[in-house]
Amino acid sequence: MLRSESLSLTRSPSNRWEEFEEQVRIYEKPLYHFAYRLTGDINDAQDLLQEAFLKAYRSYHRFQPGTAFDRWMFQIIYRLFIDNYRKKRRRPFISSLDEPHPHLEQAKTADVPDYSNLPEDSALRQELGRTIQEALMLIPENFRVAVILCDIQGLSYEEISQVLGCSLGTVRSRIHRGRRLLRELLQPYFREERRRKE
Image (cartoon, rainbow, N blue to C red; front, side):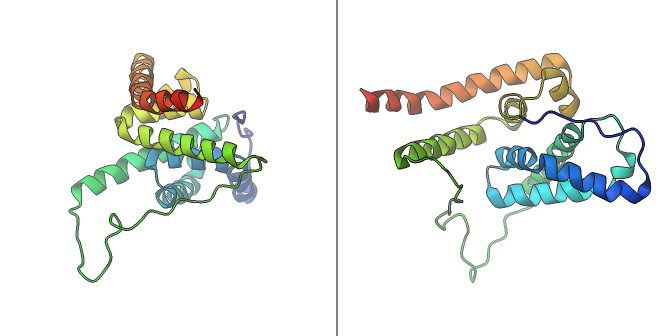
């Protein structure tokens, strides 16, 4: 995991864009992974991340020097995700008879480059990744976010508390309950894997 770096205490308006761009370059990958784990969809994750970068740049003048850029971005992504989720719940589903229904079409999986030499290992990793993502999408959103920030992004409980804006006890509870639910959902997969190996 990347170490969170604090930005310099002094910055001139002229290098504001360069500084922001450099931070985006450094943290784009872990921020994308966070957005993907939240949404469960590649396109939604890219849209969420793009929207978060735009919002962050527009409010960059309020960014507190000495604050970790990636933690600040996690907050923005999480809040945008919540706002978008609420909007989707309120918005009624509108369907056209002329257009194909996206939920009825076969979903394409994105190709992720893998540099291993064994195709079996690659297939097993992809299957496990899909299984974990599907299980993550089944647990309640507040538990999912806490587990992702802790176990995938590697944030401390204190940092998660700041990102989510809740108490340390709430963070611990959400992580514990989220892990338990995830473990319950993944047990059938791992039982099947043990049977295959026997």
